Image 1 (cartoon, rainbow, N blue to C red):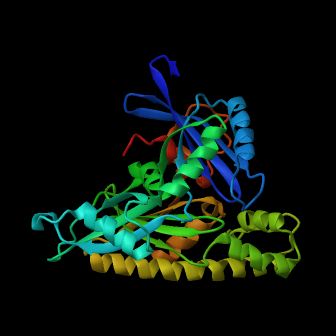
Image 2 (cartoon, rainbow, N blue to C red):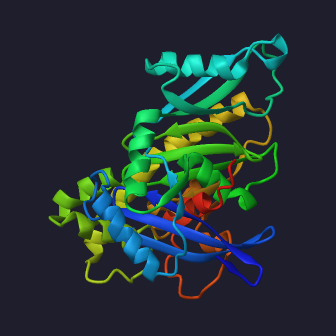
Length: 352
């Protein structure tokens, strides 16, 4: 769709366990703004998506200002093939991409021709090495085709299947500090938490934090206060780390217990972060991680950025779409929610 020299982007769709985040941009030359943005609750939380749910989403998007059927999907994290390994440098004459594919197939015990793969090497660390570190991500053909078919059977045209780490980095690109300093991106989800370390526009390190997701925290709150999972989700987001008196109907003693549980949960995450920063600094000596960007549903927790900043001693910011692009409409209610940031990164996809 064109409007006064402006063109609608593809629609970026990020399917989570609790909600589906959707974004579309309006572009003119190198300038973009948010044209439409939505965060829709899942019909069956935690279950795999089906064509019926996708058709429901398509009907809603048509009413919410989205245009066109061409989409870019975030590939489901479960089932992706990931690996970090050393391969001979290009100067040796070895086919680096082929070696990376064979290594990835060996690590995951799958056929080398059974998946699509992207691989890249981080910037040189300055240390002399006989091999080159390579990062690779593969998506099995069978899983990708089945996932794409679900959306195309519902009337969408799938332009590309992207990975969340690429979409997150793309969305945050204007906020990444110049190299050799590193930028860290922490995607705090309800079912998983993932750290990326980025140099310029290149991901140099990726790590998933096992059992550091908000679902685990929710699972602790529910029996402690005899509340539903939905109520626990609301409590986590609303109470947060801010020491104010606006706690609604929750008594002060309960608020203190909740905040102690929050601190304990995120203190363990901070230990993982510090260990990752130390490893990255060892591998890439220099200025280290100078900025931490928080995205995902957990980034919306009140006071979390300040809590991380005080412990880590680096700049920490929660990043939502309105921090990246201008809003094309003041009615975009989710422009300030960090959970929708990856969807914006998907809408920015241009075949990279």
